[in-house]
Image (cartoon, rainbow, N blue to C red; front, side):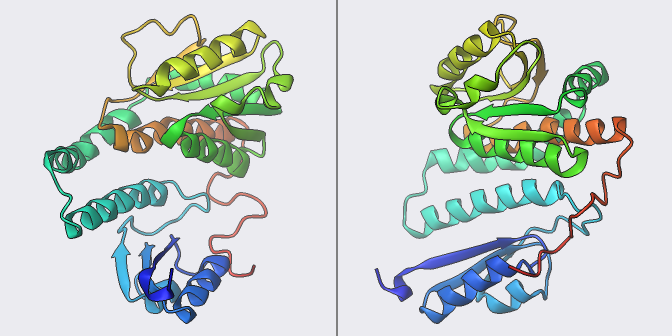
Length: 273
C-alpha cells in the first residue's frame, strides 16, 4: 500500500508528545495523509497535521488526564462515522449511534454519580493491596488497561490490565484470598464468557469489583461489589465504563494522602522519546 493511500491519525492530548510527533513526521515523509485528534490548538501535532479534530476537553490541570481520554474516545467514534458516510455506508444504525452520542452527556452525569458507599468499599478494597488485576474483553479490554494505568499513576500501587480470556496464561497464578480483581463487564456475546472467568477468580478466593451496565441479572455469584453504569450503545460502553475506574483511582490516592494532580515522576507532556 502506497503512502498516499494511507490516513495516519496522531492522537495526543497536549500535541507535544515526542514519540507521537516522530511517528507523524515519518508518515508525512512517506506521503501519507496526516490527521490529529488533539486537545491543544496550535500545538506541534496541530501544525504538523493537514486534518485536525479538536477534542475541546478544556485545560488539563492534572497530569493523569481523565477528561481528555473520554473526549478522544468520542472523537474517534465521530471519525469512524464520518468515514462510513464518506464511503456511502451510513444507515439507520449510524443514526441510532448519533442519537446515543447526543444523549451521552446525561449518561456520563449518571456514571459520575456513583454511590458513595460503593466508592468507599471499592477504595478500601484497592488501597490496602499492593497489587491488583483489571480484566476486560473486546472493546472494554483497553478500558481495563486505562483503569490499571490510572491506579498506578496516582496511587503508586501496582495494577495490571489483562484480557479476561487470557487470564489463565499467567495472572491466574497471582490469585489468592483477598486479591483484588476489577472487571469491566460488557453487554452482548462476551458477557457470559467474562462471567465464567470471574467464577474462576472467585473460586480462588480473590475479591471481585465489577463495573456493569446490566445489573438486572444476579452478579453476586461472581462479584463482591458491583458498580453500575448507565446502559448505552455498545460502542459507547467504554466512555461510561471508564469513569468509575478513574474515580476509584482518584479516591484511593486521596485516601493514601497523595497529590492526585501532580503525581511523582510524571510530566504533563512527554517531550523526549
